[in-house]
Image (cartoon, rainbow, N blue to C red; front, side, top):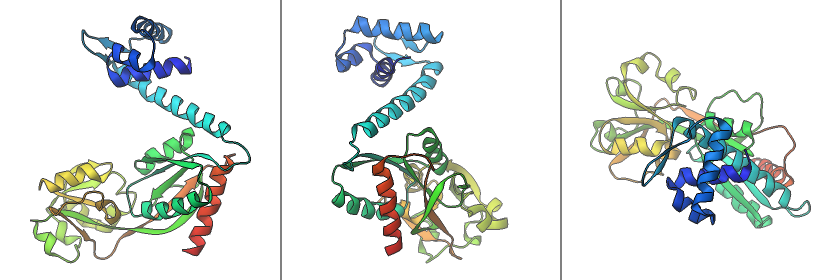
Length: 292
């Protein structure tokens, strides 16, 4: 599979229309159709369901879409790394992180680094710890920020001077919204949404015997959609305080746990050859942490 053909395939998958994709790619529609059929022949499987007005992906096509995007991202990242000169600190630094207060700390670091090296750009990827580590392993991320407890023994790491406070996001009309803090007992019998990373952050251990007394109605990945469910008064979401600010609504209120439960933030990266730009950024973060 050629890199060029994978980009063609992604354009068709994105547009769900051969003609529109051909216009974007500045090639003829018959030529693009022929390239896609040749790709199917090469892989020995059908990638598209071709209708009169749309072209959608089969299950095999959806699998290729994920793989193709990873290949294209890694190829483009590698090209940028070699195109940025050896003398000048430039290029793009790819960072993955969950939602939390740590992004305010990173914003401060990025602002200071950009003042010194204005040619550097950043690519921010938001997801939970497992997805961040997966992308780090594949080389599509340079750095990852992991919230909470996780096995990080295979990575170089820097503990960041930012902790996340756990609590619960409740509807404003819920009686718990009147409490200053929420205890384990308070949530017994309540319908709640739990972050998939919550257990690894020690949330289940913090609740102890009361964890099974809650109604675990749904699990979620990142908070925004779960906050919309809370806004709709379906239940309450266990979450970290730093992520709540992304969903600014008077209909939902965050209440911290008591006793307090916090999670640390750790910057991780692979102990392998990296660009001079990424190395400089890591050094800059270490100095910033010392000052903090």
